Length: 246
Image 1 (spheres, rainbow, N blue to C red):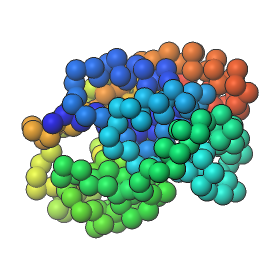
Image 2: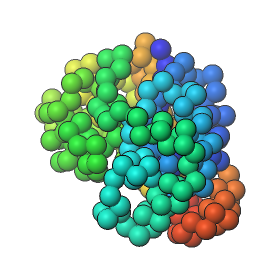
Image 3: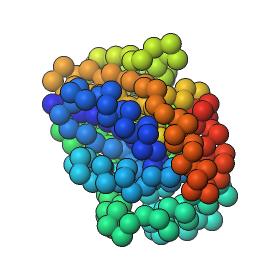
């Protein structure tokens, strides 16, 4: 079984369309590490695709905030404004769908899926030290997560935790074999709002038969997504940051 693993779509339809076009024929099942909405101007088309095509999705913090499940006082003003806008524009059907999404971790076919970390769905795992603590909570040797918008992840090789760097800006993909003696927490990166210095949409494909993960980056219509954000009256910085991947 080959899995398309996506995360942090953030209502960016242009980025999602580019990922789907690039990954066509490469996977059998699509799954998502959360944050379907927030920031972008196309929450309903993005949710419509996910509802129809992803049999497993875990919720993210923006999913909760944008559907009235969380108090917005902990969000910065930009994120808060986007969450309020999304709540006002999200269809009832999509709002109900998001509110019913499970909290990670969720186990599927021998690996786990969560948004932040295996012990806290809102935890940001940026450094190896943070990941080192999280490995102790895993129920499988392989997991996929999102939340940081940084492609890569972490490997525990039984002696230390090592960081996996994102795909080079000069490359479209990079592959890695999964060693059964090690443990992995892998981040496919963000489809809709990368923050690792590469503005290209990010995703990965996991081949459960060959135990191989391939990270991908794909160019998408950034200007189209930016124009929609401006037209919707969302904070301009949400459009600006798409061009730089920060």
